[in-house]
Image 1 (cartoon, rainbow, N blue to C red):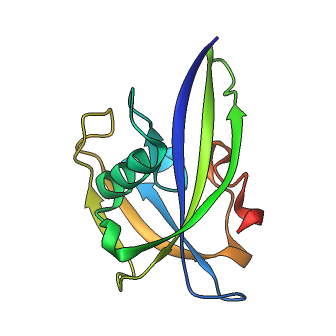
Image 2 (cartoon, rainbow, N blue to C red):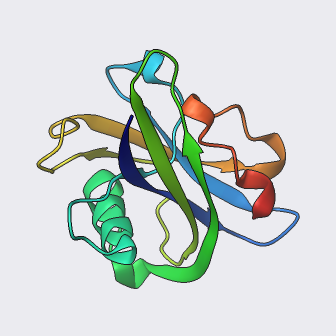
Length: 141
């Protein structure tokens, strides 16, 4: 079985009990479900570099608008019907910017290049289920 390494970003704002998580949906593909920013770690790329690259590509948020809190979880995800295991590395960051909701067109070398993502903040206490078990580590925030 092949393994692909991934990073996922839990970007939050606010304080308990009003903590909110940044989530997005695909503008033209709502069936993809509610997600958090993340993606594949490139060959010979450090985890932290992949994390900030994926955040910038998918959200438009720059490193200076984020405070790194830490790595909070790692596990292998085995999607049904695929011969690939995904090593998922979850990180927690705090957003220091002021954007409330926004659309962002992805610019990358990946399959998501050109897609438009619609971002919003969801209260952790009321967080809907995320696609593909991306909410696996939310309780660790």
